[in-house]
Amino acid sequence: MLSDIGVPGFILLAVLALLLFGPSKLPGLGRAAGKTLREFKREMNEIFGDGKPAPRKTQSTGEAEGDRPTASKSESMQSRNLPE
Image (cartoon, rainbow, N blue to C red; front, side, top):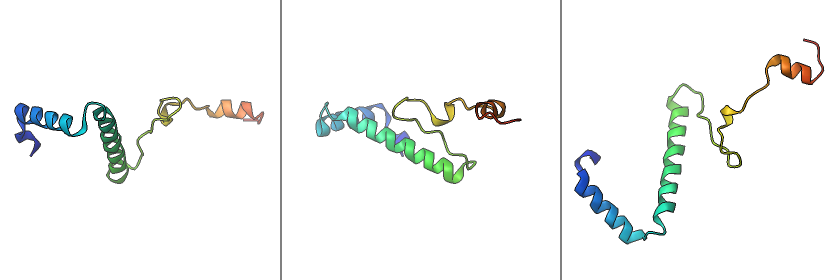
């Protein structure tokens, strides 16, 4: 269905969106649409994928939760002063 639009149809949709929402609201609408699509994709991967959830980006640091380095077993044992 979307493959039938072509370049002239896309330009027409862009002009209509610009007229309806105005140039100040278009970036916010794009961000909201992107966030919605990312969330939908992540949920679909959790349901139909390998069962492993996709890493989420944290608000404060901007890095994915799975990207943080974790302490190895020996490091965690040393930090608690426990024998290995």
